[in-house]
Image (tube, rainbow, N blue to C red; front, side, top):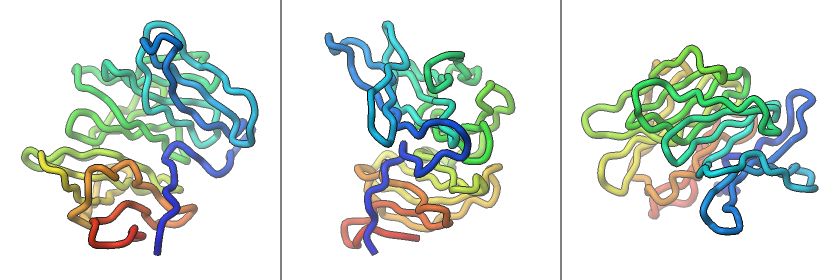
Length: 212
């Protein structure tokens, strides 16, 4: 079967009164600073969420579309309301870069890449936990919750261009490798399919797009 290249920042429907939005980033006219913007999934005017001398990247919306999380180029993990209000830096202490945030669909909790590890934190900055520390020189990346928030899919890689695909419980237990030989170029294609526990991702070149 072939996947439809699901985009990781899209959610199919709101679970409460929030307006379904697509968060993204774009440069200012001078190409100096990069800001978070949102646009309604149904179409309409775009809204600028952040401003000033910042370099914002990888924005994602919470399941109810009322909150946003993103990372700054300096390695900070930032959250705010969908309109940019109540902006807060929730980067855990330690000076380790935080990237690739992804919201839990059932709680105000965010999973993210922290250095070589996978970690999670509540959107108020509490209950920080390291969920996955790979062996040796491996690096974990691209964590994604499934649709009920009980599982997390992620990649692990060494210095080379290939990845392995893993799944673990939301608390970091039970990590299991489910595929290998994947290409780093397609890492961002990892996602869960609809309300099921099916993972859609880019396979090795020798295979069609995979569904596990």
